[in-house]
Image (tube, rainbow, N blue to C red):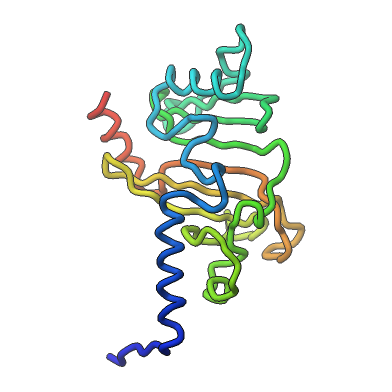
Length: 208
């Protein structure tokens, strides 16, 4: 195997990059939007805890304790999706696995956020890393589907219980698949990392 060789001048840059990454893991330079919750709702919360978090953090008024809409979905219609409209931050949807525990939280922003504001990289390429701009390098950059109409930034975090949580941001829709120049984020989504659904359900059943 051919050994890798690094130019001496690149070693300080490598150290700085590792230091920035370590700091980002503690507190994102993009601010609170990168936290693994939306209005205080986190993956694994029970229904009462999640509804209470929205009521308090969205400053809902007496009489607004319940969501604005609800529907059953998923396998055997066991999952429940609830919807909150007209919140200051935007529209919030929460999906409860088996109607019991939060497995997905979606925020459709009331107003778009720029990728510069959130310190999201424009691509996953190494050229971005060497460009000199500060950004949150925990994220992989891709698309939501093969049509490449929505750009997707995501990171996966391992949590106690043996499953992973995915924190992601989705751009506004491209007019042409793979088009460049989209600089605004339309949605934030937090979910169970694909493939970890069974691990999540087992962990929840063991705790509750």
